[in-house]
Image 1: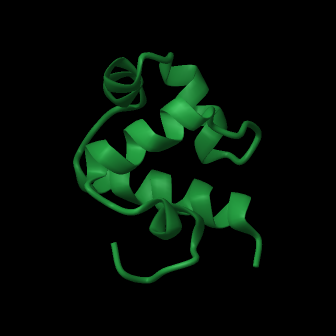
Image 2: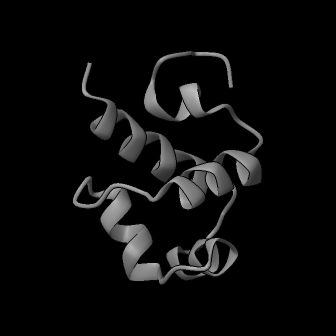
Image 3: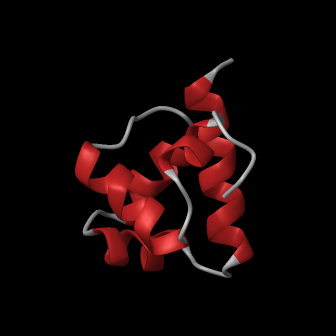
Length: 72
């Protein structure tokens, strides 16, 4: 399983499902919209703080974000 690819796809789907722009999500996370874009493209891995903030914001588990669980 490619966790990075799954994470990227899941992040993009969650963001779009909430109708958030890259910039809006970046603001919530304390990073730039460009950094969110890089996460969604799989060109950057999130810090632990951003990873946890994503799980908290979208109310999903860390395992769900990386594809280790199908249950959010």
